[in-house]
Structures are given as structure tokens and as C-alpha cells.
Image (cartoon, rainbow, N blue to C red):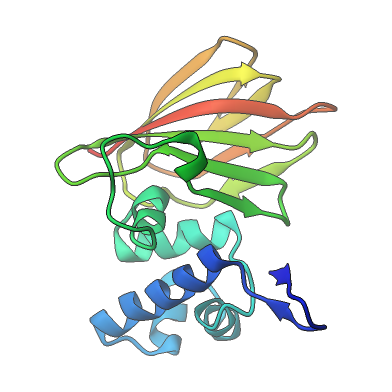
Amino acid sequence: MKQSDGDSLAPDPVDARLAVRLGELRAERGWSLGGLAERSGVSRSTLSRAERAEISPTASLLNRLCGVYGRTMSQLLSEVEAEPALLVRAVEQTVWEDRDSGFVRRSVSPPHSGLRGELVEGRLAGGSDIAYDRPPVPGLEQHIWILEGALDVTAGDVEHHLGVGDCLRLRVWGPTRFRCPGPDGVRYALVVVEP
């Protein structure tokens, strides 16, 4: 949420478009908020507030909803953008922030029809810890290349400690966790390829 000229908070434009799209996806399936809550494991009140742009959804919340709707996070975020272009200038790349976790996500090369891969820049503040209980799409291929700092990535029961220049390649079938041991933040490139 961003501060407007008055005393009230106005939703971030991306959050507002995202809220509309989340409502559309639920309506397309004919689900009630209660039905979506059962499928996603997210409370009805949280889902309602997200669909009304009263809250900025966290990465974990979006991951759960993407899993229910069969989309990657980038696909969902691309659906709230304008028509995709072949050339994506730095100033046009969508940046989304999960303020609660300290995660900043830049969609460098967003999803495009006919292409299976996308490129994302991720940043985590020192000490940040994000856990995903499932992948948005089972078998999703990920390549995580560390550009600055260090990152601990846990996939299933295996923890990987990554430093500058390291690249972790994996297919995601279960829970994952991204943790920046700090004290400095981490910046990494994430290549996502749909199965």
C-alpha cells in the first residue's frame, strides 16, 4: 500500500490489478471464498482482503494461490501487466515486493506465449527467510545463480549453501526454502522453465 495525498492509504497499482485478477480466477472456476480457502489452506478473510487490495499479498500466499490455479508466480504477475513485448526495458520490468519477508522480485524476462522460460531477479535482505510449502507447478525447473551475497536453498530435505557465482539447478516437486544468512542481502538470477 502506498500513501496517497490524503490520510488514507491507496493500493499499489500492481497490487490493485493483482487483486482484480485473483477475483477473476476464482470466479472463472465458480468457487466461493470458502471453497478457495479449503483448496489453498489460506483463510477466507485473508483471501477476501487480497481480492479487495486491502493487503499486499506475501510471496507465500501467492505461491499457494498459484498452486491452486496451476500457474507460476511470473505467469500470474504477467496477467496483470500490459501486452508482453519482445524487448523488456529495465524501466518497464515489473518489480513486486513482499515487505513482510524482505523479498523483492523483478520480472526481467516475463512469461510470453510460446516460450517456456522466464528470467527473474530476486533480492532478499540479510536474515530473510521464505518457505514455500509446494511449487506452483509440480516439476518446475529452476536455475538459481547468485550474483551478490549468499543464499541457503532447501529443496525437500537437502540444504544447499550458495555463494557468488554458484548456480543451483533443480526440479521442484515439494517444499522449498530460501534463506539469506546475512548480514548483507543477496541478489540472484532465477531462470524458471515450465515442465
